[in-house]
Image (cartoon, rainbow, N blue to C red):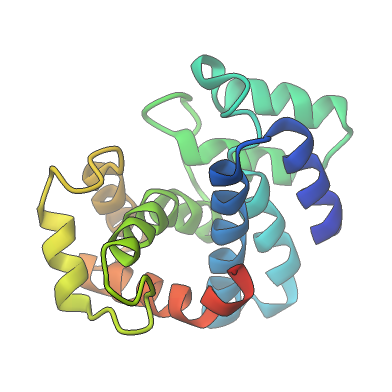
Length: 184
């Protein structure tokens, strides 16, 4: 599946600009991580998984991850892509644990990209370019800020990857800086 095909499928099931932007953001961050972690030859796949990970959320929030498996299978998508996209909901909407490094990265950065995006909107620049890790950590600790972004899932993702929280926060902030211009 190409990036454009993934985008078209996402748009078929998601009309809200927020959901489309989230898919685009997570896709770009996943591509960045693929390159950084030595999976450059799979960067297109990582990005496609990121774009499609919330395919079903807008239409089927109560069946999130389960419904996207059905949709993706009906579309004839690769089982590896289906599994990777669905397991990001492990522990809160599906009992499918992330196993591959890419799946663990998606699990960790899904909520975190939302937190970073919300923090950027609060800045005078409305950008991540001038955001420091210290500032992000302060927002992370403030449970009232972007309350819908689960700190527990983010911390669990860092643990799954064998990273400390500072590494996950810092690397994802770096990724979002690197891709911000293409997301406008």
